[in-house]
Amino acid sequence: MLPRAGQLLRSARGTWQQPLAAAAARSGRSLPAPQMLHLKQTGNLKHHKAACYGTLVPSDEVTVSYRYGLPVVTLMLPSRKERCQFTIKPMLTRVGTFLQDIQKEDKGIERAEVFTTDGSKIPTTTLMEILLMNDFKLVINNTTYSVQVPVKEKWSREHATEAEDIKSLVHRLFIALHLEDHQLRRERELLQKLDHLREQLVPLEQMKAKIATSADAKTNTLLWTGLALLSTQGGALAWLTWWVYSWDIMEPVTYFITYGSALAFYAYFVLTKQDYVYPDVKDRQFLHYFYRKSRSQQFDVEQYNKLKEALAEVEESLRRLHQPLHLQLPIQEINDRD
Image (cartoon, helix red, strand yellow):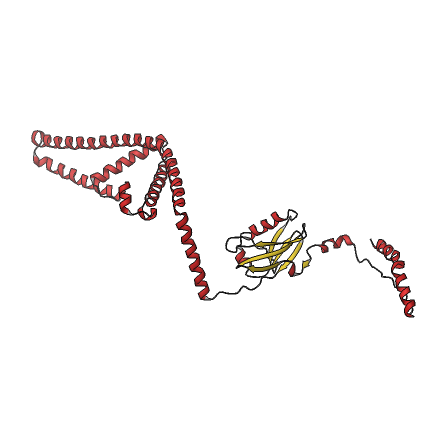
């Protein structure tokens, strides 16, 4: 490389010396002695190749300006060698989306990243509103651009209030113009979800009905068995009192039977933390038989309960969606339609 540069300089010497000699002759002055530019290689260029990359380009290569209240980032596309402007929506656009837009605009960009001024990498999920609060560095391929963000004028309290009022008005107008479409779309989604839940519940409902019938039959059998045992006990005590023994002998027996019954009721309360009330006892026994039968039939009670809760939520959402205030219809008209 260095010998080639020397050859070029020597070949060009005659070209630029002739005009200079003619000019010196006309003016009567002598031409200064020619001087040769010497180039000296320091070190191996192979080891300094990385110095050609990552060069800090002046900050005016990437500029940030505000137009109609939105930031506009202007930068030079490396492949196309032309400047391109990107309009940013600070509260919606993220850093990753901004970098993807740059890469889509120039297919020659293989690497696009954003760093802080101290070299910390900024995540792609960061909002552009946060990025544009301070200066940053934009790395495109192997070139680093130092970006200076202009200070945005702060709104006064009156301007901020007016802006919030305008946003609220636009939001209400959007809802008023698109409310019917939104309700129809929401109703269609809820109806589809309702049909899907009902399809899932059909086989579970059939299995549940069979298990509940079996558990109810066993519970009733247990209740009738208890009644039969109590009747048998009363008949046996009467027979022993009047036909076999006397009341003086049977009185202590009946006392201990009553004490044993009270002890059994107290033990039931200690074990179940519930009073011995016949309807509650029946429901508890029914659930005992139901869950035991469910395990044997591989009936998933938890999944069934989740589906029932989801179905109730969808039905409640449909009911609220059909309310007169949501449909913006008078209540009388709703009643007439029903």
